[in-house]
Image (cartoon, rainbow, N blue to C red; front, side, top):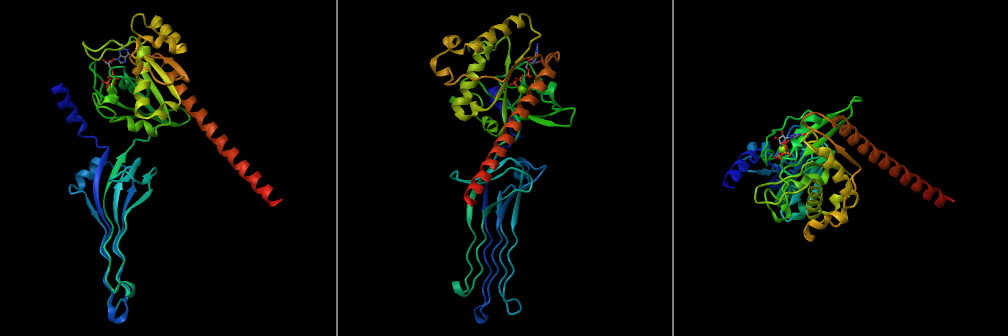
Length: 370
Ligand SMILES: Nc1nc2c(ncn2[C@@H]2O[C@H](COP(=O)(O)OP(=O)(O)OP(=O)(O)O)[C@@H](O)[C@H]2O)c(=O)[nH]1
Ligand SMILES: [Mg+2]
């Protein structure tokens, strides 16, 4: 256990997915009472989404984690209106939610160039404030990174998630025969012949009891929130984390994964999902696959062996159940196609919904004109 904590800290230390910063808007400039001059406003502090930036880099570049807007210029005989203080910009990666310390959302950075105002500069001194400037807003903010990927991969340790990501995409994650090899989320791009790209995130660390903060707990599940769909990965032969923990067959793994997601946030299990049944090259895999398919069709009947609190409220219906072997490459093309089809299906539905909405709005408008 001690060993695990040490490795975990070392590797996880390179991946920062939340950061707390101090921000203060610049103070306004002094007004000039004699001539009724007005001081410039203090500069604001913004968080701006930029490519190729990470929270780790912000941490390294600004160890004091303080961002302060420029002070507004004083009003003078030559310039009755003082200059506005310089804005301070915190360049952050796309996928950030900016909140105050107490969790109030200030904004989201969903695309490059998005900006969130986090501290307003003070106003310059003028006739209305007896020429005294005001101070800028002061607060602590939190930058919370949620990876933006099309597909979020979930599975228990050793199921072969990283192997599958390698087989499907350009990613090169570490692969090994012990649990918790991957200690931070990994992204891979699936490329298609028509140049379409789909991003898949391997979200590690999920174990039975993660909702009780076992292992890495729910640390990475927040990244699933922004993925469009889920890719469950199970070992067709089942899984046992350690000799003293119970053996879990593939079907139980599916149920437990669903339960963990549900306990984190119920709406996560409403996302469309695909199931990849991995390690089909192992002996008896075909029989086990058939058994799993039968169990997935009658989940209530087969959930009997599990304690009540481990059975999900709603059983997932997978859009596709795809047998694969990340090792031999069996089924990888089929899985890639299913992922594409499933995302395309949703894109068509979304377009239709927008179209319907516009049509309804037009009908409503024309009725009002009559
Ligand atoms: N026989 C067989 N072994 C596989 C297959 N896919 C993965 N493995 C092996 O299973 C072990 C775990 O694979 P990983 O890809 O590291 O599994 P993971 O789910 O990413 O594991 P963690 O990162 O620890 O959560 C490795 O020894 C792989 O070589 C497969 O299709 N067939
Ligand atoms: Mg892994």
